[in-house]
Image (cartoon, rainbow, N blue to C red; front, side, top):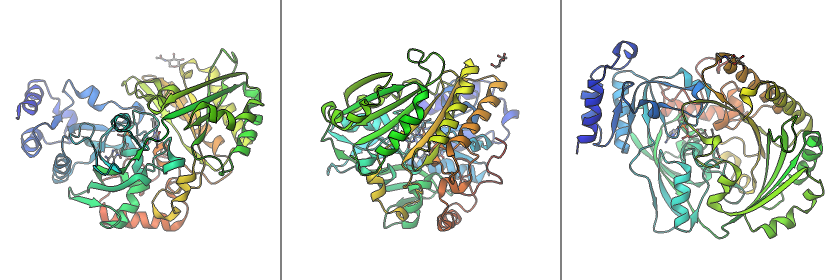
Length: 503
Ligand SMILES: Cc1cc2nc3c(=O)[nH]c(=O)nc-3n(C[C@H](O)[C@H](O)[C@H](O)COP(=O)(O)OP(=O)(O)OC[C@H]3O[C@@H](n4cnc5c(N)ncnc54)[C@H](O)[C@@H]3O)c2cc1C
Ligand SMILES: *[C@@H]1O[C@H](CO)[C@@H](O)[C@H](O)[C@H]1NC(C)=O
């Protein structure tokens, strides 16, 4: 039963481990930690052939540096890894599907705890009302498992992201107008705390922590599994209408969109937007794409979108698919471009949460986007997303009942920059461009950013709320559950010094 960890151990010992570069970990980590882990857990060192795939990230520019990666197989492996790291005073850091891209991650040096191979994956409860989901699972795997059983629930719109980690920061999803945020589906969590103790967290046990885990969860512990609400599939069809405009129409399109954003609409109807290069429509500048995404048959959507056709788009298309095909048909499948973690690319994400479309800011943001896009071919696959998830069920949850602070914001803007890694000039250019777009898109209102889209230079209140009681409560929880500040690298409540003002 020990064969697989022994094989790894042997391969590591045989290859030349450059200890000098990684003095942070004891040289006897394998002999000391291996017996404390379950048989299928693996301890990887940088010399391992598995290292490149184990350590790659969506955003290679904000990468943590690991001296070892523990690929855990069971909850106790997480606890033992945490205890081991603490005994040796080495920082530790848990990750699952590696799409987190806060620049604070670059400050981490220590032991990585990879959750993506957690043995316990997913189990639908007999009641059919909830499922137990492993802490490292991928959104797409959860979707597929449930779909086969006639069930569905909120998971990441991009199938490649974790199922648990987005929920810890709120968790936007296609169903949020109907069921709420991903965090709103969480019934219970098993959490490995900073000292390695495992606790069950729900609305009775560690009640205050349960509040904090839903919106700021990555600050307080490592989730090994969660009990999560699921729903019967009553309407399997999703319909999409795509209206494409040349950018001269931007003001007109978003004035129209603002009128439709009255919150009284159908909770199954989402308003989506994307700006990107589409030379078939405009050879000069990125196009403005407006989409309706609707949980229902196309015939119903057509009735809702009559006046959008009156705008007379430059191009138009439509589709009707079953739910598992929704993300792929929007370009967000687990294996599509936006999702990839191939170790080759630099990718940079931003988030700007706003209540409505401010056409002046949009124009400024668009112009900043277009100017660099049109003059630097290396960035040509970059795009901007204007996410307009429906919010009825999100806003039905009392605002104070979770640590998620942005229930009032109906739109999430996301400039996403893509380019090849290995060119420092481009890296600098991307950072400047990203910030320029962030400042333009946030307009004059108080800056707010969905924590899971944060870049690292936003004020901490922008993520966790401007109401003083929110940060106060989060800091109290931090004192109680993570007094030494172990969870300090991914959008921490207590930033170390300035929040990455270097970017
Ligand atoms: C292409 C893409 C698509 C996205 N789509 C969506 C979307 O549809 N909806 C949405 O809400 N967000 C989305 N996001 C943002 C997403 O929520 C964050 O990037 C999230 O951190 C990704 O989780 P991960 O497991 O892939 O990343 P990781 O980098 O593995 O995790 C991010 C952080 O979460 C913490 N963490 C991870 N797992 C655990 C755990 N089990 N217990 C405790 N802490 C943990 C760690 O601090 C880690 O640094 C998207 C991001 C990208 C890049
Ligand atoms: C890096 O990118 C810049 C800008 O496109 C380019 O001018 C330069 O030649 C590139 N450098 C390398 C080494 O590829």
